Length: 175
Image 1 (cartoon, rainbow, N blue to C red):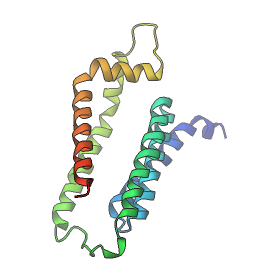
Image 2 (cartoon, one colour):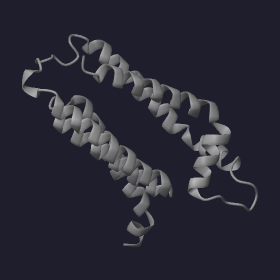
Image 3 (cartoon, one colour):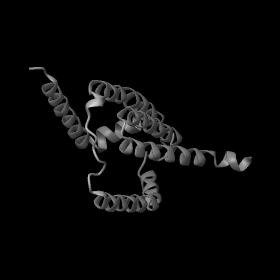
Image 4 (cartoon, one colour):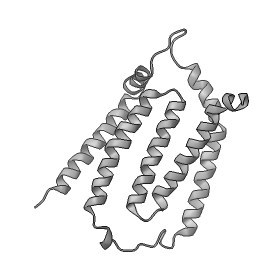
């Protein structure tokens, strides 16, 4: 029983990581858009639990509210607006199975390499953290990382979102 308590967070991590991967695969492989949306919601919630396991409560709540709430409502509106009975049957991968298989093997190899060498990156990240003896709260860490260290990519992403929003308004306008 003591071993279960000692390894509880690790067991939870592996369970929710596997659930996130399986539900993400469901998003891209299921033909019914409604089932895909449910799998996407399950992926979002599993990632939120993974954030909680890493003591990133702020990011977990943002994951639930922004992605689990806002983005899923948007997806459900799109699914309701399209006529699912008039969609043509599309053959999955349309004769590109060998290319998809090679791409999948390359991605699995890349993620395996990153996973095996992630331990070195986490040690370096902890060494470059807060000043000696001082620990910032989770929202403060996120804000400092976004607005001090990564300001230019953050602003570029906001410009992309603005252009996408303007494009959606123009395309959605009725003639």
